[in-house]
Image (cartoon, rainbow, N blue to C red; front, top):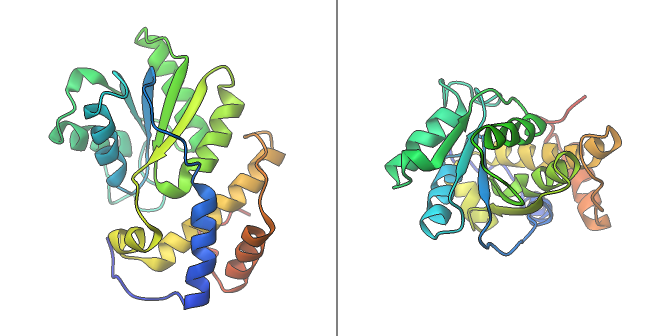
Length: 221
């Protein structure tokens, strides 16, 4: 995506991988009533949505998201619109896709997508959230707060940490995102935006260490 420069020391890489592993829920993918492809800067999300659709895991797919706050120039017409187009290119029929183009955060992704599904007459008892790998835990915690009656399964492209770093090409960006998402997992439950998630001590230590080392680009004040 960007410059592929090495910026992480080996110790920092190990700390980042600890957080990477924590963010992933490792749910077993199985058939659900509908899936939601969460907006991001990563076309791996709609690609994996298409793969799971072709595997027959869901009949209806919602793409949700407006302009990306990290890289607005990447998807100028909004994440959901570009994701839909990419999924269609990969074989998902247009009739299977719903688009929610307004959401600007994960809470809105869930709430607005739920409204779109209801408006389309889709009954949802189980839903799959498909995201970037390091967004799984935060999206799960958010959905369990905002949509408690639905069974929530999380999924993301099955990539090893080093492979994901190479695919994005910007170690600083990825590590900033890992740290920022962990902060949100911790703080959003206190604000009532998500359910609480236990954070292991080694993950907490890695989090504080990476902040000390300057990986603060996605922290909230």
